Length: 301
Image (cartoon, rainbow, N blue to C red; front, side, top):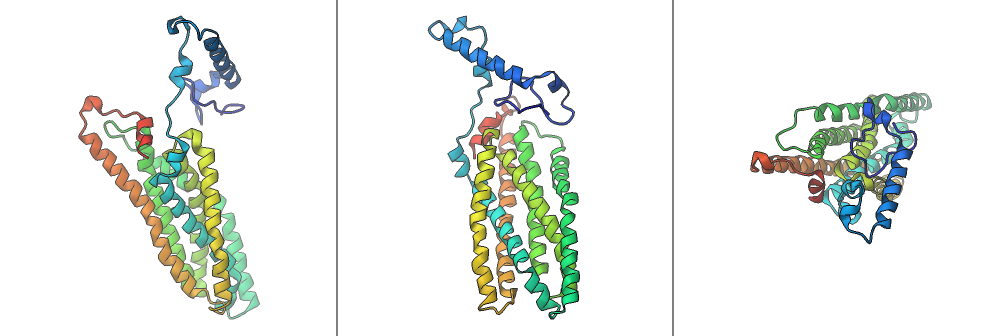
């Protein structure tokens, strides 16, 4: 990786990441100084004919990207926000009611409650082990040969819907297990919970980096986390409902959230349909015109 930062827009032939090879010869500071010098030189010659300028690298490297507002108002962002918010709310409510849930299922046996609480705490440590699995699924699915005319972004989106679907399926299974009032089953609930949480936050960042321009990643990631946090405030009315009208039994709230969790499947299904439409559109384009610029693909958002 570069010693300081990755320049944007990227210079030609610039590479970064593991086994980057040629990127070792790049010096980020030198690239930035060269770019600033080219800009200053171009400004000095602004009154002359454009052909007198020695280099047009600055103009060539300027990419046309989708506006931030268009990204926020796209279906990709809206369905992704719903996907993240519902699952995050489900996790927060489960953790918030865990102690009362275990006490109710264990019939207030403090030793048994302590045993299951310790088991839950130990499974949380496994999140470090589970976190890379989602990335491996993304990379393995992306490694399939590209179809004719398929861009890199199309391949990334194609690899993402499997990850999004598995994360949604994990959340549904976790919510179903949490809703069943059977104490030994909670061991499986703990495993599904930590696995789903690992897939959720890793998949969130991965999808934003795939579906939207790199220059908007920080803004979009911060916005989706902030909006999902606001939606997660619904946990407090749910807590009040459980402690009040439901007399400490979260069963009906669990059933409601389980039914609500079905909505998270909209996101991977929408991505799948989008990829299929892109594939069909490429099949109808002549081979010589099959290559589509990634910036144009992003504009469809």
